[in-house]
Amino acid sequence: MIVAQAPLQLPFAPKPFRRELFSSWLLRLAAANCVTLEELLAGLQASYPSAPYAFSLDVNLDHRLLKFMASFSRVPFTTLSRLSLENQVSHPDSALLLRFNDNSRASRLLSRRLGYAFCPYCIAHQSFVHVPWEWAFACLLHCSVHGTPLGAGCLSCGELDPLPLGLIPVADQVPCQSCGANLLDDYTDKDRAPSSRTVLEFERSYRAALLGAAPDLDLLQGTSSTQFRQFVDDTLRLVANLPDEQPLARCGKLQQAPGLSRQELIRTILQLVLYASTDCDMYERRGRQRKSLKVWTSLLVPLTPEARRNLARLSRAWPSSLQRSLASALAQLTRIDSFYVAAAPIHSVRDLSTNTL
Picture 1 (cartoon, one colour):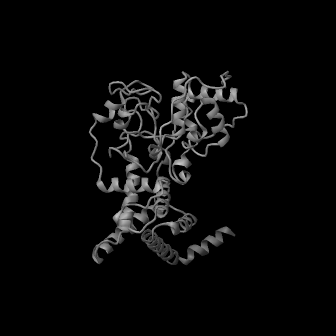
Picture 2: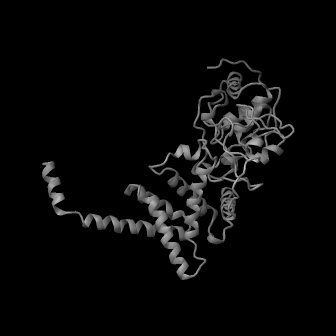
Picture 3: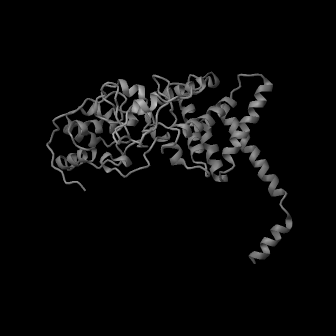
């Protein structure tokens, strides 16, 4: 526990960037005043004892905390309130957000911040390194500006929170805040597989849906932003939490090929969208339906009957074509389950009742 003394107002206060995460600005504020993030919040509590404790530094920020932080940093309250994720994106809590798995370094308060992947080309041109909100969404794998894959962590030391927030890049040098390796060399000099145009269009539509715009996908014409987001968010949670997988490792922890696990998740969801499309002739449509049933079955088989019913209820808010594909898969599984129940030997039931008695 840190016992701190601090002035009522900090001497230095960097201006927040548009679309920046609140925790990113806090780290830059701490760096500008030569303290750690933990020490900064302890100083706020010392100067303003009525300031509430912030369990999250990015989502559902308490207005009282923002008011005290506005007084402490001399940054207007309205400016700070815009940094809260729910004020930048509609219903962020329904999406799958990146989280840090390693909480060992208390100074940067990893357990209370969102995780992120980053674009090396973006940070090379930022006046101050900072984290835009879109880097924290598990569904967004590519930079919206450059179209390049987002990097997860430092390739040299494996640090999941490598950005030196608060420092100015000099001569294209952005050092990892843990080991000092140049993050630009790690990613820009490494061969990266070209991304599918369809994947980029899918992510662009999802990014637009986060801001309330309808998806710009020919395969989902007439679909609202709410319907598209609901399907992606629900299905991404379903795919990421399969019983034979490790959801935290797939969506947050650094892998040998950063971003590969999330690419697999998005590829599965994109397949379901492609297979549900009706922009083809009857024969191709039947082939897509068979492929869609195969993908859905692989996702639904591990689920309990109650979980399947819950998913069916959630699907009422999805695009109609995807509702139908899920309903077909659920109906097929119901028929298969009924067949095996009907084919079960009668004596096995009698033996079970005898053993119970």
